[in-house]
Image (cartoon, rainbow, N blue to C red; front, side, top):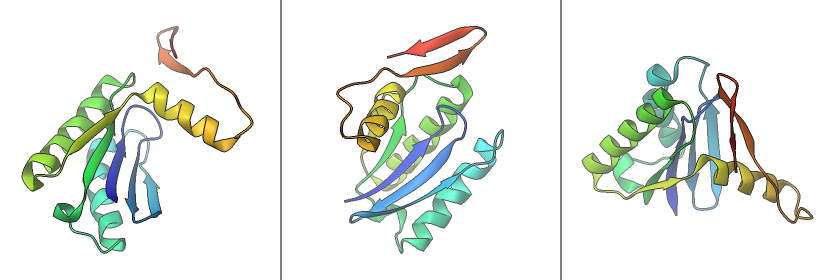
Length: 125
């Protein structure tokens, strides 16, 4: 399986490529997601020896998260998916963080994810 993953729901935003069991990832500089997203994705694909049309899909975090960041990630992924005909997949941000926490410690039976929603609010899941 060959996937491009775009995380733009919060800081730090990042891009990752998974190709046949191995992966490579790159964080994006704070506040520069829209400028760095496509060049970093292209760089990772080149390092993996892949063309965008060779991907089995592109994945994005669906939110909750930064409204602008989510739009940047979604529009980039949608453009890539439509241009190449590859599938577009989405996963909830809270689910992504929970799965990472559970993978980090297999003894954990469950977890709750709390993210800063700004303005004195939180995202909880």
